[in-house]
Length: 462
Image 1 (tube, one colour):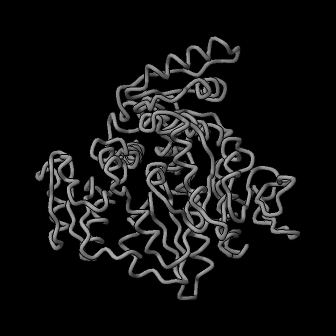
Image 2 (cartoon, one colour; image 1 turned 90 degrees about the vertical axis):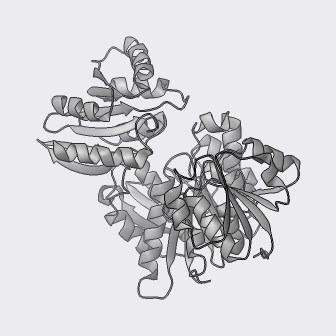
Image 3 (spheres, rainbow, N blue to C red; image 1 turned 90 degrees about the horizontal axis):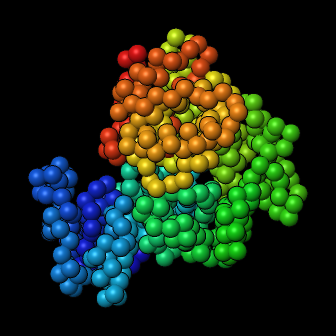
C-alpha cells in the first residue's frame, strides 16, 4: 500500500463510497477535502456521521480551485468522469481514483471481481455463499461488497491474507481503475447506462478494463456463448475459465449444462454440480449465474460440494425475481432490479405460467423493440407505469401489428401504486404477476431498492 501520510486529496460526492473514502484516508493522515453539490443542510446526516474525522467541506459546487495542491481526485460512485473538475484534473496530470482502486491496492487477501450488464449481484452473492460454506468451521472469512452492500474499505483492517473477497464492479467503477482483481469475470455485455457512457463502445471499453489490467498470474472467467463478451478473451493474459450453455470444444476449463445437469470441467475431470430440476432459483438466466459462480468458485479453489449446496438451496437476492406472496392463487414476484429491457425480458422468459407484467419507470435511451416482440408473444396482461409508459406502448403496438397471435391487454397507470392495483384486477389463479420494469426508478423513487420495497408493501396490502 502506498504511503498516504501528508498527501492532499479531494473527494467528489458524499454518498456511501465518499463517506468510506473520507473515513479511511483521514485515518491515514491525509488532508481530505470533500466536495458535494448538495447543501450542508441536505448533507447533515452524513456530516454528523463523519464528525469525528478532520475533514474540510466544499458544498454546493465543485470549483476548479479545489485542484490546487491536490495529489489525487477521488470520484464517488455515480460521479461522471466528464465532470468539469475531473476533466481539468486529467489535463493537469492529477491522478483520478475511486474507493475500489484504493481497496485493491491495500487488500492483503485474494479478490474476485465480477462485472457484466446483468446478473452481477446474484453471481457475487452466490460466490459469497459458496465461500461461506467452504470456510465453515475455519477462521477464514468471505467478504462480499463493492457495488453492493457496504464499501469494503470499512473492513480493510479486519481482512486477513487467508480470507476471500468477492466484489461486484460496475462500469462506473471500472472506467477509473488501473488494476484488477486476481480473479475477474465478465458475465455478459448488453446495452446499459448509455445515458451515462454515451455509446456502447465507451460502455464496453469500461468493462474491458477488468481483464486488460490483469497480469499473467491472474485468472479470467468469460462467457463463451455471448459474442461481445467472448471477444474480450483476447485481453486475457493468464489462465481462463469459460462458461456457457454448452461445453466449448477447445476449452479445458469450463462450466456448462449437459443432459439437464450443471457441470464443471477442469482438465480431464468433469464434476456434476446440480441437476437443473433441483436448482432453487427461478429462471434460465439464473442457471447462467450459477455456472458463472461455479467457475469463479473453482478459480478460487472452493469445493464442488459448496457449489452444489448453494445451487440446491439459494433462493435469490432481494428485488431479483424475489417471491413476495400468493394472492388468490396468483404468485407475485419483485424484479425491481430490472432497469433495462433485456433484464425485464429475462424475467418474462423465466416463467411458463400465464403472466401479468408491470413495466415502465424512467427510460435510459435503450432499445425496446425486442422486449416488445417478446411481450406480445409471452405476456397475457401488460401494465405500464411511469415516464416510459407511452414509449413502451408505441413499441408494443408496432410489435402487435406484426404478430398474428392474441395480444396482451394493456393498461397505462401513472405510478406504481395504481399499477399494482391494475395488476390485481386482472390476475387470476395460476398466473404469475411480475414487477420487472425495464426502466430506472428515478421518476418516482430514489432507487430500485426503494421501488421494490414499495412494491412488496403494496402487494402485502392486497
